Image 1 (cartoon, rainbow over the protein chains, first blue to last red):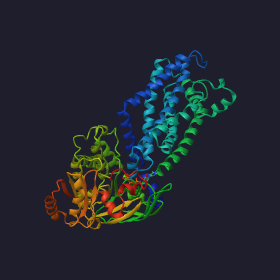
Image 2 (tube, rainbow over the protein chains, first blue to last red; image 1 turned 135 degrees about the vertical axis):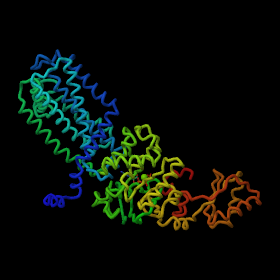
Image 3 (tube, rainbow over the protein chains, first blue to last red; image 1 turned 90 degrees about the horizontal axis):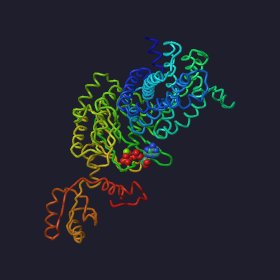
Image 4 (spheres, rainbow over the protein chains, first blue to last red; image 1 turned 180 degrees about the horizontal axis):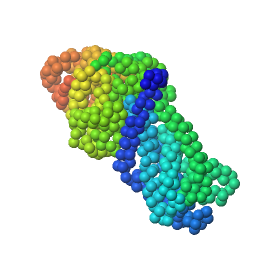
Length: 271
Length: 320
Ligand SMILES: Nc1ncnc2c1ncn2[C@@H]1O[C@H](COP(=O)(O)OP(=O)(O)OP(=O)(O)O)[C@@H](O)[C@H]1O
Ligand SMILES: [Mg+2]
């Protein structure tokens, strides 16, 4: 207790406030954002229909043309689509934050004695929950089309948890972009600039081995590739699980550390 | 409280050496036209933006160095209502209460009480996107009050309210001040400043151009205004002539609206004489009254310029 007070008294007021109120404030902000998602079903419906259409299109259009390691293209495809959906879902974070800034809500939050980082963290947590919901739904659709976990329930949970971590990490990048550009429309357009290369220069839809050499180099280090490969290994039951999972984890932690500090610094310096 | 504050946006000086002081438990009105720097000053004092130079403290907290203390002591209702469209009125208030760390129970009670007080009880459980502009405004004000702040910042609080709601809000501000709250409000209406404020600071292009109690300021600018509208445009000059024995300044004659206005002291007492004189001279009056000066007239007497041309030096000068 005594040492605790000592440590606390040395910290700047800002940090003390952050520590003391971080959890309750994040909880309050998460609840707010989840309520908002529940009340704008158009957003949720849209966010689910789009990936479902993707699953259907890819399975039936490319299913015959693309040679993969699996007999069943959807077994190969679904992990890719899940990662892509998580990635696109993460862009909601920046969009939502930009909206809150332009509508003046962020001004109100910034005038309150709440933890600074809770506005962003609460948003990201809500977005992660929303992504989990969409992912579960898509796995359901995948099952109807013949997708199977060839491993076990433990691996299935591992897949969902990895996706949650992945979408969480990319939400921080999106948060940083949202706060920096602080205009919802620009954020949306900017999203496509980095999302499409990231998803298509990866193993998400086609095997990396079919790409030109220079592209293979890029694709191999792409966090989307390592994540998709980890998910495939976990759902198909062959391929390297730990090697890929370890890299996914490293990417996620690296992204969170860098972009969380960038985003929070930007947020504190908003004018 | 505020000393020599400046803030630039690029080359533009939004605040140019502003100093002022609010006495505890009083109302200070910042009066100024568009772009005067009112919002900029409020945002600095609420700890939202940093000044380029100068010092400010609110409730004893430095607005740059001790924002944590500051935020616990203040309530802010910005110029544009900051309420969540997809939450209900009640949810909005409870969320703000929780973020002030009042606890769930207290937040809930304060939210109900404020909804009642701001006449929003019936709409409380509807989503804010179904609210009218005035209802949103009132909800926003309620949110700023949820933690019983010691110092309250209201940026143009009555803009967009109908006359009845405006009067209600004035009463509410008066009762808050009676309970010891210090209020800084911005307004474009002299009448509002006069009704509420103990002190008035007139701001123009980032500078304080006048400062004092409402009475002092009114003494400087003539206090009341007489305005007369005639039926016959041709009689304007004759009427202005007839007024000269009652007023000190040269009356302002507006041909377009067939109106004459001029600062007047003891207007109420002199009104009868003026009406009689006009009657005898055969000048037909369409409307006559004593009123508070408009922001334009305040500026005219303080700077010799109208608010509009003061705000935009080379403006197009549409009818003032
Ligand atoms: N973020 C900003 N970037 C650039 N200029 C700004 C910014 N905010 C305000 N200004 C400028 O600073 C000046 C003062 O603006 P401010 O909003 O403080 O005026 P105001 O008195 O509140 O006006 P109004 O009555 O229109 O609300 C204006 O000329 C405005 O254009
Ligand atoms: Mg303003």
